[in-house]
Amino acid sequence: MGRENDHLWEFRTKEYSLDNDYYELEEEKEELDEKVKEFIKTTASRYNLPKQKDSYKTKISDIFNGKKETFKYTYDFGDSWVHDITIGKLKDIPDKQQLPYCLKGEVSCPPEDCGGIWGYYHKIEVLADPKHKDYHEVSDWIGEGTFNTNEFDIDNINEQFKDW
Image 1 (cartoon, rainbow, N blue to C red):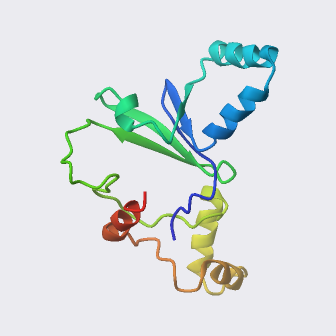
Image 2 (image 1 turned 60 degrees about the vertical axis):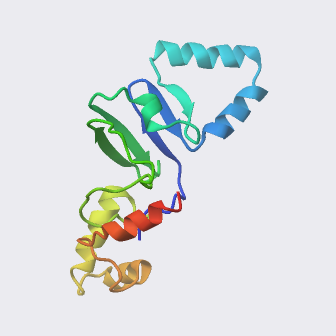
């Protein structure tokens, strides 16, 4: 289980927006005429929209100044998984430390495409009751006996991070 990076996502601070649609946005801008480019620039300024940054080249340390700050991470705009993430203080990290690295966490990540928080809670409710009318459908979809909401394997998570 876990996120498979199959959907659009965005990190957003008060000042910046980083997402996996950056390149397409930049390519589209190049094709636009000057009036449309000016409209986009004016609208962003008028509504105080965050500056777009290249998520593949931007580091956390490029955005945060070392003070405690909370930002939003949205994954899958259809299911709308919104997370508040707080960075307390950036510390010096040993050169040999693999990044990113998970220090702690709890519970399992919801499965992909489960219908957002509402669909996820519904599926948990259904799986807890084998007599529920949707039990067979949901257990077939998720894989019977394969999902444990309380599972959190920090070693597995850090192993997956090595691929990043």
